[in-house]
Image 1 (cartoon, rainbow, N blue to C red):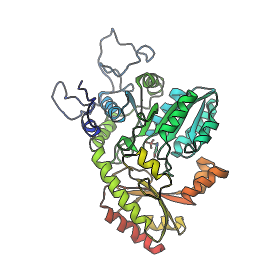
Image 2: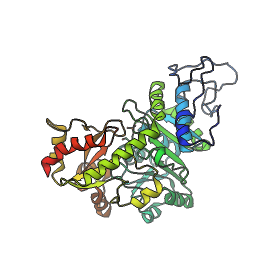
Image 3: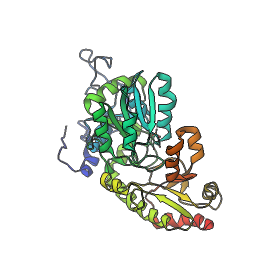
Image 4: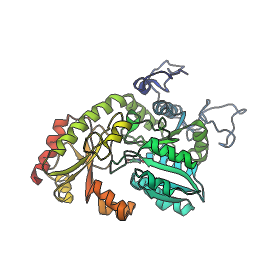
Amino acid sequence: MRSFSNHDPRTLSVHAGLEPDPVTGAIAPNVVTASNFAFQPDGVAFSANLNPDMTALPFFYSRWTNPTVRQLEQRIAALEGAEDGIATASGMAAAAALFFGVLKAGDHVIVSDVCYPGVRELASDILSDLDIASTAVNLSDLAAVRAAIQPATKLIHAETPCNPLMRLTDIAALADIAREAGCLLSVDSTVATPVATRPIELGADIVIHSLTKFINGHGDALGGMLLGKKSLIEPIRARVAVRLGASLSAQSAWLILRGVDTLYPRMEAIERNAQKIAEGLEAHPAVLRVIYPGLASHPQNELARRQMKNFSGMMTFQTKADPNLVARAIAGEGGTKLVHYAVSLGHQRSNLVLMRTDELMQSTFKLEGEALADYRRYAGDGVFRFSVGLEAPDDVLADLFSVLDRFR
Ligand SMILES: Cc1ncc(COP(=O)(O)O)c(C=O)c1O
């Protein structure tokens, strides 16, 4: 196995985990479609209980891992500075692997009060049925985090920047709190990517990703990953990847590896585009507010500069006019031609979607009092969550302005 300890992440992003094929000499990853691998009857235990390091050769069965999937696990682990990683079928499967991997009945978890709605719903609607209590806290408010810690707290789960608000969390400060409390800190770093932030270096125990977003970057594969120390990751692989079975397919792993090859130059281009588009939108008379970590007007711009080496490609904007009317104008006849009205993010093509505050409060976040007021400070009645792609930024601005000009 080639060792890459002293290399720059750009080098790791194209080499780590990749070995020339020992039979053909191929230097690009193979898509190993086999679900099943031949092995000798002695020396390979069937159960994850007896065979915890299921990533060692010979491969066994692709629900454990697979040669193509393993290359992806090693590549992302190298980029995050993690000892190991488990690839999962989606980002939600990584979140489920995290919660079911480290929590059991009677435990308590603190989750960000605003994060990807699926993760919040997993904690509030599903963990509660299993007698795992969760408290939703604004993790940017460190005093509130300290106050929420209980003797049963086993995990603090953060997301930074958080989806959809683009509010940031100070990972190093949260890691100090978690260490004092004797619990684990996990960070969903989907929007940041390792190009921007490496949470393990800042003291986090576990990083999770939806690989579906910027890391794959092309909107053609679902995937997720959970990364950390081998001593943490190994039992989680046995406990959930193997038993719950949400494994990543080799085809998706291959597409995502292909995406990772260009992760660094893509994120640099996306950040440049996003900065220009954020500044252009901020100056448009129909726009009330833009929230992007790279703007001086972001409420936590100082933290963004300290914690993010790249401001990534996601932003929100609010319009002065009723956002429902603007959304209909964007998505309808005569609307935008380049920017799709679509829900996901992190792809080569720009897209946006309206996230209505009332709807999210009712379906998921259920915030009240100061927490709701804080949400509204970032999002008003609703934000357009805008994921910037690789198009020329002037074309994207012209496309958006063709609609926004009607709401001046
Ligand atoms: C921050 C974040 N985490 C997790 C997820 C879930 O990922 P997936 O859709 O791959 O299951 C998403 C999806 O949008 C996300 O934005």
